Length: 300
Image 1 (cartoon, rainbow, N blue to C red):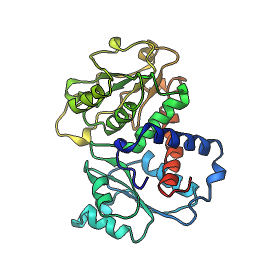
Image 2: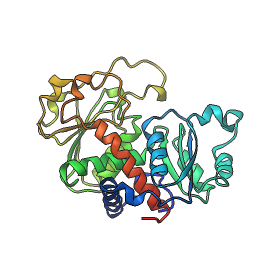
Image 3: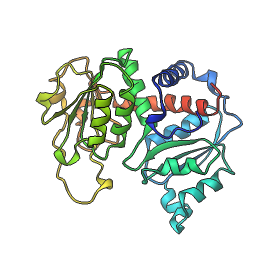
């Protein structure tokens, strides 16, 4: 694999290969600590990030690589002077062996890859995709249930602008007997193109209007915050808030996931519940991103 740009580029076989490697790294990280001693990774983030940026930086350094980084490239790089993505990455390719990029443009990763001979890893592109987040999400599901086939997933919150949702659905569609339920305000409903994609893969999408319509023994509840930075206007407060009372209406084997950061959509009284998986999910990002860096450099 040269670049990591989209969930569309993965096959089921490739996913399992990445997941198996991530699990080996998680079990024995010391075995991999010098694999990238000769590499330099550029971390170029034009939008705010905590988990993605820091986990990529940690992943690179735990593998022995060095990093050059900026957390606000939109303001503190030549982008503030009008430089294009293409020109920026042409320059960065002379300093680093790979680049992780996050940008407000949906096509930023593809733009970077189109002019670059070094691997580009998409750390989040506008409202489009966030493939490495989807990989760690699916890895977390597999880790919990031992498999992905047959998983029933409820997606909640911002299904319109939520790039993590869009990438996750693309990966889930590679598996068998998947069921997807969507719960959101009408203003943030899942775009039809994703519903059509699921239908093409024989996955029925069930639109819901309340928690009561979700199966009580559903495997995964995947909540997201409203992406207020992606639109203008006020759509009011989040209607689908999960607190302990709501979570207790679901099975003891249901897990609650969230790509974070959360705002009000998950109450803090849920954090100590064993079904709350969002912090475990975030920590798994380190191992998935270590596996991806090894993969793009063929150092597995």
